Length: 134
Image (cartoon, rainbow, N blue to C red; front, side, top):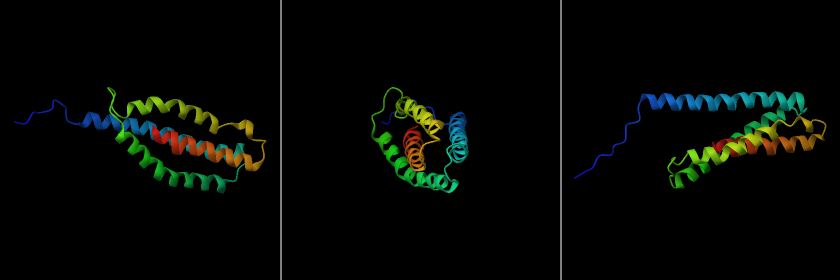
């Protein structure tokens, strides 16, 4: 004898909900990334080519961090809130802090190498590590 689960099927309302969640998330990411290029070039004085190479390199890093985060979530034990919600709660603080650190215009007068290293570290932390976890 087979027992039936009382789980409602994934329907159209669920798909719309996920769509708007992804839209908000992607809109925020695109807006931040677009402003970052302007910020790094005009405020920090970093060459556009350097910024572009970083943004491309970060996508290669994402190829690994996205898979790793997927495995971490898949292997975690579900809580009463599921597998994903605890990660959203844990990582919203680090995303906010790294977002703040990315846009530190106080470093605009620092040596060029310092600014480039600061950009690389904060951008990779923000986009490829912390943002991936959300």
